[in-house]
Image 1 (cartoon, one colour):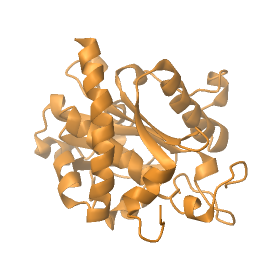
Image 2 (tube, rainbow, N blue to C red):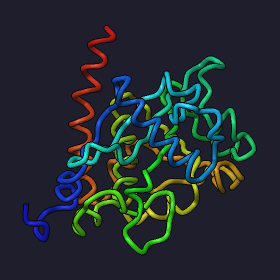
Image 3 (cartoon, one colour):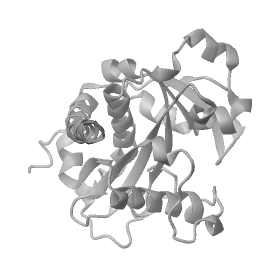
Length: 253
């Protein structure tokens, strides 16, 4: 592929594939990425709780998990999950249980959202090996010491977090979750704003795995407002995830 003429989607998908993690092995790979980022590197969660070096919690069993895998190495580069809400107490979203002090109650009530249409983007993580290029400082989303990657390949690493958000939009669309929340560091909504993904702040900033605030977005607005280059990437991600999602529904039924 001629990298100069390739679209953003073609460049990214040349090096990475986006998967719905349904097998035990794929989910384990996602949990291991989370451990490396949340426990080992940033110490948001105590590493001692996870002797097998795989971070997980009570929401994982009912979540839709997405894995972003580096094609040439097979290494899991990033992950994210979409947690669906439910009517019962066990169906609370993570922000409703752990971040109540951040919630702008009036904002959320004015949405008049049905719980069956609500979900939360959660546990977005990009492995440190794919987060920065040589000479760049560490941020949670954005050292390639152990991987043999070209400069062109490394330039796509910054798209991993974006691809994870697009995957969540696709999963929300597929599962009928119109109203989506996330506890995010303020820089991430600013980062994706130029791409047409416009998160609304729905609560105050608090200390939770670093400084975070509650944000909200409508699934359809993500699809309608993203820039054309991202729409192409979203379209491919949606098609790939829909195949596995549909098969999963068939297996359940």
